Image (tube, rainbow, N blue to C red; front, top):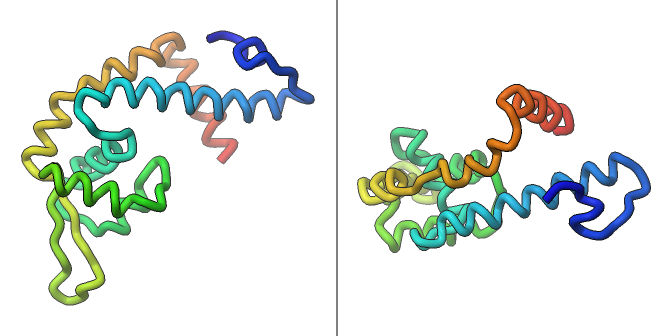
Length: 145
């Protein structure tokens, strides 16, 4: 990795297009690394994200709240949660007042799984930039959005 133009053997009409492709390419590259880190635990990046959200919530929250907080919005988030529930990593409960509302929370088994995952393996790939550079990058990405 180094220069996006060399990495994908392409030329760009301007620096904005190059930046756009570079962001997408880098996001995909990081997703691949994340998938490799999570492979031994048999969960996807999206499932890991759901578990993190539920751990951070510290109590049961609605499925819609989970969907709103997801980094990668997924039309199949309910199916992802079904799989996590089947594995015993999360628990579901219907709202007594409104049966359409479903609450989810992380189980003890899910918390244990998260404690086993060494996210430092993933973070180490970002250590090629300084903390100050990371702050600048965050400001630029926030400005884009």
